[in-house]
Image (tube, rainbow, N blue to C red):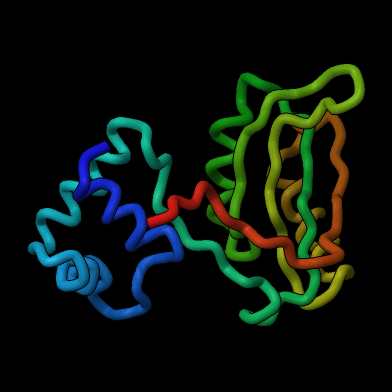
Length: 157
């Protein structure tokens, strides 16, 4: 990894600046232009050094006091298309496909559902169940009991 890539990772690993123009702010911090920052991020993504840029919300801070990871055993032939639809629902912050671990864990679709309380989350579970229809064979909901620190790899200076 070259010096610029390392400095870019160090400058972003705690998150992007919370400004209207975060990449321009990074450019000022790194002593380059915004196009160089964007090209550097694209290069890191293309080489697999970083996988994605995404938001990590604090669900409690935005008003969701109940958070349930719903897990679904969905027909593999339609799981991707249905997952795309579920991921667009307003009460879902992330939805993704995962491998099954049979015989103990038959679930291949995960969706984090949010609500003001557990009853509201369970209403959302039924909305997802209706959307999945006969493609869903079984499901469960695992409710959050605490906030866990969400971080990836951290470089040191």
